[in-house]
Amino acid sequence: MNLIETVATVVDEPQEFIDRAGGGETGWTGMCGYLIGTLSIFVFLRIFSAVPPGVYSFLNVLTIILGMNFFFASAMHLFLEMTGSRGAALKLFFLLGVTDFFWVVLIPLGFLAKLGYLNPVADFLLCFIIMILARISLMRRLYSISRNKALLALSVPYAVVAAASLLVFIYGIVYLVWLVV
Image (tube, rainbow, N blue to C red):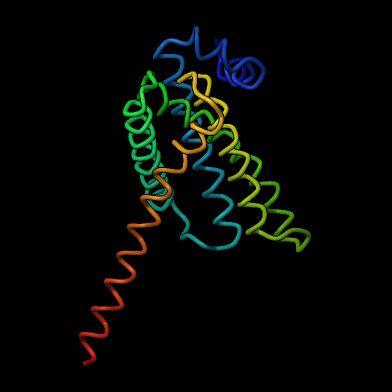
């Protein structure tokens, strides 16, 4: 089964893909999804000169995205296991990679934003929302859970990152006040 046929199966019949996909097929598709999604995000950021050019910058973006998705998959799996839902953490990580294929839409939207027809932030948020909806759909099928529980499981890692960022920001302000006084 080639990559295009696998992605078509994920879009057309996600439950069949999750049920019959072995670790190897899901793994290659997920890693290709991470690679292509990261390349799309990198090209979008390069269009607006938000990241420096080069392979090193791309590898940094890839490392950050893989690390974040590994953290998100582990936090979601932990939450779902604690609430009694059974699934596979590794398969969840690779399925998150499959949803990263939706970032490909960001490149043409970025070109239209560069020409002044669209807003780049709105383009990024549109692709992000599409990716989140795809993750909820695949997570529901993998763990056999409701839509609300999938949304809650997906929002837990984002809430942890937001809370940690807020704590770091508050600590930074307190430290700056302490330096001045």
